[in-house]
Structure formats: C-alpha cells, structure tokens
Image 1 (spheres, rainbow, N blue to C red):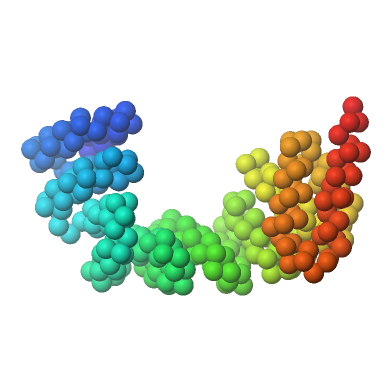
Image 2: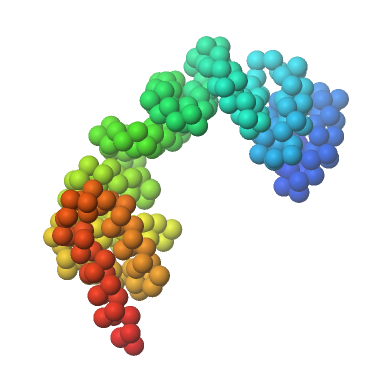
Length: 296
C-alpha cells in the first residue's frame, strides 16, 4: 500500500471516528468515481464499522452489495456480508453463507475462523474446534504461522475449555508457551484454570507461583483467587495467609472477591461433599480480615 492509499484510509478513518456516516459514504462514492486503487479496503473498513452500529445495518448491507458489484470475489466483503446477516438476526442464513464460503475458499484462514465464531454462537463447540483446526492447517507460510496461529491456538484452547475438554486445552496452551517463552499472563492463568478444574491443584499451584512477582495488575484479583485456593488445597496455609495479605494491601475490597470466587467457583462439588478445607475457607478469610483490617 502506497502513501496515497494510506492517506485515503486515514481520512476515511477520521470520518468513522467522528461518526460522520453520511460524509464517509459520500467519500466512498468519490473513491468509486475516481477509480481508487484502495476502494475494496475502504468499503470493507466502513462496512465493518457500520455492522457494529445498531441503526446502520441496512446502510452497511447496501454498501457491501455495492462493493461486491465491483469486487465479486472479495473474501473480506463476503465475510462482512455474513456479519451483516448475523447482526440483523439471520443467524441460520449467516451460517449457511459462511459454510458455502469454506467450499469456495477452503484455504482462507479468515473464513474458517469466522465459521468457528458462528458455531460458538450456536453453542456447537465441537464444530467450532474443527473449524479452528482447519484454520490452523491453512497457515502454511512461516510468517503466517508466527503471526496468525498464536491467536488461533488460543481460540481453540478457549473453546476446549468451554467444552470441558481440559486435557486438550492444556496441550494447546502448552504449545503456545513453548512457541513463545513470553506467553502472556492470560495464557498461564488459563493453564492453571484447566488444572484446577481437573482437580490437579499442585500443577495449578506451580503455574501460578511462577507468576507471583510479575502478574499484571489487570489480572490481580483473578490471580489471587486462584492462587489462594491452590494454597489451601495443597496444604500451604502459611502461603495462603501471605496471599491474603498481599491481596488486601493491593486492594482491600479484593479480599471479598477472593473468598467468594475461590470458595464457590472451584469448590462447589467439594463443598457439597463436606470437604473441610473448602467449608472453612470463609471462616479462615473472615478471621484474617478481622485480625488485620484494624491494625492501624
């Protein structure tokens, strides 16, 4: 893309940022008249935005149809057409359209990934996982593998977790960690999450303990909740107290979240069975809170 094309798209983006829809559509018409070399990208950009604006779905549909008249083989525009049907409530038609696109463009990562998204909406996670596998298989260029597959593997792992297939989810997450030693916090938290759901609190503890000094502030409460229950479940009561102290120092209100999330999210079955470690979690936390919240 040359500088002139980049400037065209920047100008269109300014219209979008200011929500000047009519001006943006007029600008597209001007690009059509001037036979702009970035017309397809411009139409796709505006259509993608209009598909997100509740009162603009019909405008988006008209724009997409106009674009397809100029670019009948455009995968991005056909995918925007699928999304347009989806946001207007025609989910079945959107799914059928995307399934047809996989036959027309069987090597398109974007098409298979969008099909996976549609299957997720239907709650058909098995089909979604299969679609993600096809998307991964389409990444046959080294740069594409490095750039695209990371996200695809993460999507697959999240789908496997939703489908309660924790063993395969762990394999996916480990693949991400092995391929990228700087794997982000979310991936390592998901890995610990899988181990916790499987009842392997020791492995979950190991995952979480490696993050203790480097956890992003965005994940603090979720992290403390997981680490706290792992400490209790692996008989590390002293460390559990340190976790509570750290959590309380970070945010006094987070103590409440720790108690509730750790007790009920990961221990409903154990509580029903009368596991004393879990039953006593609330009491333990409450005692610590009472003994330490008025120390000043």
